[in-house]
Length: 374
Image (cartoon, rainbow, N blue to C red; front, side):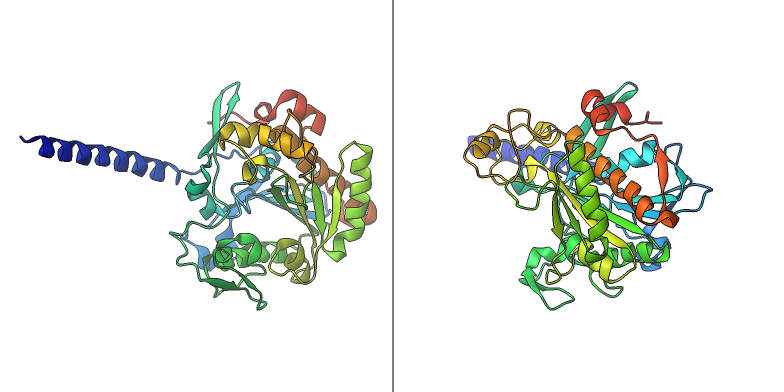
C-alpha cells in the first residue's frame, strides 16, 4: 500500500470517528431532562392539552400543577423561554420539586421552548450539560440554545416581520419571546407562544411571571419588567425586596416593543404580566472561557475588569453571580409578588411552603434542594 493511500485511509477513519462522536452528542442532547414531581404536584398536563395541534410535536412541553383544596388565586410561572438562561428553568424545577400549595394554586412550565433544549449554540462554545452533585447522585440538566432548533423551523427569513408589522433580525423568528401572542396558523415558535397563551387564558391566571437572565452589560438586569396592569404590584414588591437587601430595577413594559411576554400576556389576557432578569455571565460578549463552571459560578476575570472600568449595569467582583444567587433572586421576588398580590387582592391569595429562602440557597447550595432521581 502506497504512502498516500495510507494517509487517505487514516484521514477517512479519523473523519468517521469525529462524525460518530458528533452523532452521539447530537442524540444525547435530545434526551429529556429528569424533572421530579414533588409532594405538591397534583397533576401534570401537556401543552397540547391546551392547543391540540401541538400533539406529537417535540415542543409539546410538560405543565405542572401545584393545587390546594382552598380557593384563592392562580399564579403561572414560565421557565425556559431561553434555554441558555439556566436559572430560569432551575428556579421552576425547584418549585416543582419542593413547593406545597395550601391556598390557591401555582402552574409551572419549566421548559417553555423545549425545542431550544435539543441543541445549543456551537459558535458560542456553550456547555451542553449542567451537573449537580446531590446526596443520592448527580442530577443533569441540558444547557440549550436561546432559540428554537432549526430542525424544527427552517429557514430563517432575512428579516422577521412579526404579527405587529415590526421588523426584526431573521433569527428572531425562532425566539419565543418575540412571538407572542402567538398564532395558531403561524410558524413553529409562534404556535408554541399561542399554546402558552391558551394556558394563561383557560386557567385564568391572575399573575404570570416569565423568568429570564441577561448579560451583565445589558441595561435591563436584576430587574422586574411589568405590564401597566401589574405595575402597582411590582412597585410594592421592589420596595419590599430592597428591605431584604435585594435591589431590583423596575421597568414598565414599553407599549411599542411588541411580541414579548410582559406586553402581550397583559394585552391578550386578564393576567398581571411580569418578566424578571438576573445576571448571567455566560451570555455576555465580554466573557472569557465559556464552560459549565462559568454558567454555574458566574466567575469571570474579564467581567471583574469590566466592572472596575464602569462598563456593567450590575455589581461584579471575584465572587461572580452563582446559580444559587440567581435562582434565589427569582424565587425571593416571586414570593414577594405572590404575598403582595394577596394583600392587594385578598380573593387572589396564594399560600405555599417548602421553598428555601435566598439565604438558605446561598448557604446550602442549589443541589441540596433537588430530589433524588428514581
